[in-house]
Image 1 (cartoon, one colour):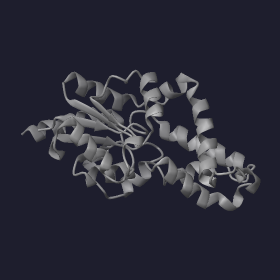
Image 2 (tube, one colour; image 1 turned 90 degrees about the vertical axis):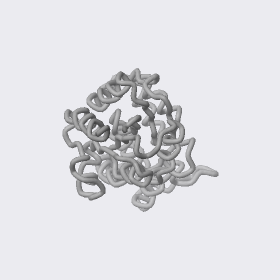
Image 3 (tube, helix red, strand yellow; image 1 turned 60 degrees about the vertical axis):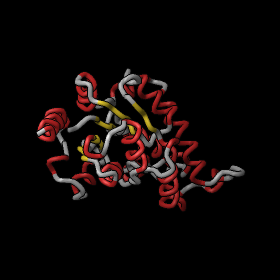
Image 4 (cartoon, rainbow, N blue to C red; image 1 turned 90 degrees about the horizontal axis):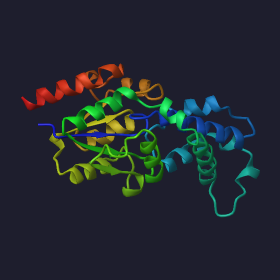
Length: 244
């Protein structure tokens, strides 16, 4: 019997992955003196969705290092990846100054599922690779800050997705076993983490993750929801079958 639904945040409840991609794009565009375009970085980011901030920064630096102005890396005690991440966070935080940007990027069908399972007294968890301060800000803007029984963020785990640590910890916090949960994810990295934790996962890809998720072969197409309008129906249908 399913007792809990666990949600990812970025790309699942709100399209912050798209905003993150734009912030990395703008940052590298600035650091390269426009030798690299924002759109080029956004396309590269598609391969990195779901990875930790540190991993994304390091991989983008490796890819674009030879095009970035070396004078902009001359900050004592800071690595190139740290400089990129700091610049990107400044841009990302500026985006957050307009609440309407986040509201306009919310995933209404996924949020509707969250509200429905709360109403039906399922346990709910949020397992995100965002750090707590950013996750808290997003949840408050979306008015979802009281929608979860437990929240685990990047700062509370040693190993980021696709490692299953965050989901294994969530099962423990919610006091359920792996057969009593469903995870809602949007990226290949998140799907791998869920599967490694032994939990059923529904993938609801966005425009950044759709191609990767659909071609990954990680889960049956039954569990890939390309039309978000179908999410709640398919999840509750699965819950009914699981109740047997």
